[in-house]
Structures are given as C-alpha cells and as structure tokens.
Length: 588
Image 1 (cartoon, rainbow, N blue to C red):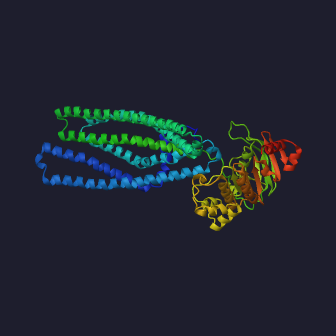
Image 2 (cartoon, helix red, strand yellow):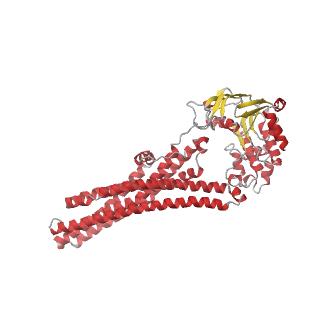
Image 3 (cartoon, rainbow, N blue to C red):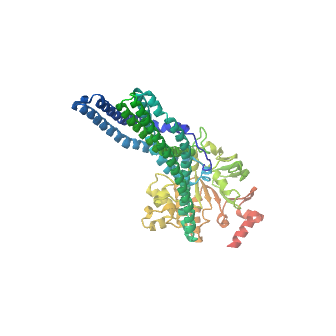
C-alpha cells in the first residue's frame, strides 16, 4: 500500500525483472549482437588510423593507392554493417521494450483486480495511475537500452585495454587508473539520483490524485466557488514536483561535471606521459595517436553511460514502484479446492461473526449470531458506524471475517470460489457507479454477452425503459463519465436494471434510495420491490418508511443486534426502533 515505503536493492530488482526479458530472449540476443557489431565498427577506426600513421612515420612509400583503398573499403563496409545494426536496435529493440512494458502493465492491472477493498481504502487512485502509466513509460527505454549500453561499455573497455596493452603497458595502466575513481563517484551519485527519482515519481502520483479529486468533485468546487483553493492546492503540489526535478537536475549536473573533470584528467595523463615516452623513443607517433583515439572512444562510452545513468535510475525507480504494488498481499483468496456455488436457495447464517478493519482497530462486529431463511427480507437499521454496511460487505467477501463464519445454504462461503459467490449476490448501492460508455453497455455489465432483448427486458423490469427510449440515442446514448449526463434516479434505475439482468438469488440494497427526491424514490422503490420478489434480501435503510414491509428488521448498535422483529412487533415493543421511527416520521 502507499504507506509502505521501501527501496529494493538494484540487484534484487534486476533479478526480478529478468523474467520479462525471457519472453523476448531471441530479440535480446540479436539486439546484443547488433550492439557488439556497432561497437566493433567503432573500435576498428583507431586501428586503421594508427596503422596509417605508423606507416606514414616509418615508411611513407607503403601508403599506396591499393592500401588506402583497401582500408577505406574495410571501413565503408563496417559503416554499412553499423548502420544496419543500429537500425535494428532503434526499431525492433524499442518495440521489444514496449512489449515488455505492456506485459508489466497487464500483470499490474491483473494484480490490482485481485486486491481487496482493504487495499483501496488506503491507496490513492492517482498514485496507482502513476505506477501503471508514467512509471512504466520509463521502463520501456530502460528495458531496451540497459543490456546494450552495458555490453557496449564493457566491450569497449576490454578491447581498448587489450589493444593498448600491446602498445605500452605502463601508459595503459596509468590511463585506466582513473576509472576506479569514476566508478566511486558514479555509485555515490546513483544513490542520490535513485532517492530523488523515487520522490519525484511519487509526487507525480500525488499530482494525479489531486487532479482526479478536484475534477471528480468539480460540481462541489464550483458550488462553493472554491476554484482558487483548488488552484492553490495544485500549485503547491506542482511546485513541489518542480523542486524535485530541479534537485535531480542538480545531481545530474554534479555527476556530469565530475566526469568531465575525469575526462580531462585522463587526456592530460595521455598527453603528458605520451610526450615523455615519445621523447624517450618508447612510444611511436602512431601508437600515441591510437591512445588518443581510444581514449576518445573510451570517454565517449563513459559519457553514454553517464547519460544513460539517469535513464537507468528512472527505470529502476519505475520497476521498484511496480513491484511495490505487485507485492501488495492479496488478502482474500480462494481456498484450495474451492467449488462453484450452484442452485443457491438463499439461506444465510452468521455464526459468532466478528470483524475489525485493521490489527489496531476496534471490532466493528463481535460474536454476531443471526439466521436468514431463503427468500426472507431483512432490513438493517441503526446509527451510523454500527456495522450495517460492514455486515453486508462480509457476505460477498469484500472483506473476510476476523472471527466466526458466514454460511450460505449451510456451507461456509470461504469454501466457494469468489467469482461464483459474487455472481450469486446482487448489490444496489446509494452511490451508483456507471462506467463511461452507453446505457446498453452499463446495463449489460450485469451479464456480459447479454442480448439486446435481454437488456431491454431488464430495463423494463427496472422501470427504466421509458426514460431510456426518450434519450437522444436511446440505449446507445453515452452516459458520460460516472453517468454525469443522467439524473440520480435515472442512474439508480440503470443500476437496478443491471442487477435484474444478473438475476442473483441474494440481494443487498445499501441505502439505495436515500439520495433521491420523493418522486424518484417512489419510482425506484417500486423497481426494488419487483427486484426483491423471490430473493433473499438485505436492505440497509435510513428512510424507515421504506422497510415497513420487511419480514425481519435487525436493529444494530455498537453492542450488536439489540432488537429483532417485524415493523409492528418492534413498534409495539417501544424500544430503539420505535424511537428511531418516531423521530423519522416526526421530521417528515
């Protein structure tokens, strides 16, 4: 979850990332071969120049047209090979990186679908969006360039060292003595960059979360004329992001500057030591030229690694944040040997059920024992925080009980697959969520693959067909994001049609009419009564007049179920329910 802060070692991240290369091992192998070819082509030029310089110094007559054309032809051929290899690296290599990014995004989304409500109650959607989009964009470049950049650098260092040792060992050792110091500085700056990039990526998530929060609540923002407050909040987060970017650029500048200093140090060592060795006759002019050229090749390679360091650390940060989510535990899983629910009658029993949301939280429910007969209508009433919604959330295993068990038709719900359990339970909530799409698509969500006729029939049962037909494009009307183009009552009836289409034997109505006006409430209540027929129904209601016809009313308080009975019995008892009902009816 977002509160978990950790940074995995680079070695661990690379090891865990390697399986994503495995699917593309042939492409990776060919990409590395192409990288090797481009490197060889680059290393041959200093050899050619060194040979020409040596011949010009010792035997100018050997520089014949035949020799020059041969050297030119060899180099031209190598450049053609280099161009072809580079084309593959730039095209197919990048596509490979994109495929790996796609695989990772698929794995991440698959895992997110499995995480329980407990995860989403603490995680920010904006942070999750940052991890599934911008963080993984950075992985594409890393995935493609990382193997080839390290291979190219390794080949250049080994070949340069080997070739130059054949020229003059002391000068070669002196020249390469600078490299360890460069590596120490690189390690120092890499650690700083990793930390900053992780903070920067997290801040991108915070900006996403703030923007999402502000735009989804735009009606509230405008109704309170609080646009400036939202702009100020956004500005604060945006400036924080700027500060982090500025800090990262400063570290990169420090890293680049230190490497330029080492560049100059390496060149001055070659020039000064080379001049002394030439003066002593221990180094030829051709070999001296080769040292300068190989130093240039080597330093260019180091510069590429320096430039790639930012990309590398961004990629590592993206991978780290990717695995943070992928490592989030799946709290609710199917038991080994879990079976599908079949022929559900709808008998429900709560046996000594207890529940608390976190290890440090107080119990919301404690030792609850309740029984529901098939087809029975149960209403849950009581003060906020008494556990009404929690109790209903335990039935489809949105959360798991922390004590006791819940039975359906005499069997523990944990013995069933989550999919079949939730297919047997329909939920109509107060806060209706409609997906961005058409009315037809939103109703059909209740039964994927449903025919047009089935969708229309469900809408008729929900009392929604008439208003849907009057929409500009009927069932093909676009609802807008979260159904913003429809009224509350219209959205609620579409959600009821969705459940009609699902046709579950058990139904949960979670304050389904509390946010509606009286006219919409009356229409929706009629639809709900139709929907409830022949099903086991749990109704959470604050409008007590809507549950007078319930078979049994459970009055939940912080002490559990304090009263139980039908409306008439509880009114005659004159207890908590009677008081709540009197208070509600007197306010109307």
